[in-house]
Image (cartoon, rainbow, N blue to C red; front, side, top):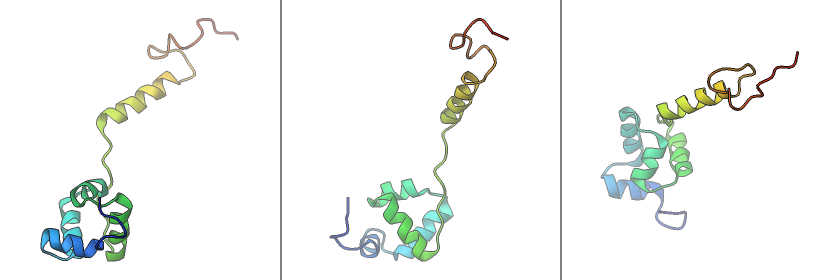
Amino acid sequence: MPNQYSDNFEMNIAKKYGKSACEVLHEFCDKGVSYAEVSELTGYKIWTVKRWCRRYGISLAPVQVNESVSFECDMLNKIHENGLNKYNVFSKPWVNYH
C-alpha cells in the first residue's frame, strides 16, 4: 500500500488511470463508488482518499449498510425490550414482580 514516503497520490493515480486524480475521483463519484471501494481500487487508505476528495470538493457515496446487519440490529432491539416477547423469553425472568 502506498504511503507518505512514496510518490504522491496525484502522481500515482495519473500513472494508473491516465487521467488527473480530480477526474478519476469525479468519475468514481458519478458511478456511486464508496470511499472504501476507492481505497481498495487505488491501494490508498480511506483517510487518504477522503483527504484528496475534500481537496477537490468531491463527496463519494457512503458505505452501504448490509441488510443482514440491519436485521441483526432489529433482532437485538427486540431481545432487549422490557416486556416479554417471543425473542427475549429465555433471557428474561419468568416471574414478574409487581
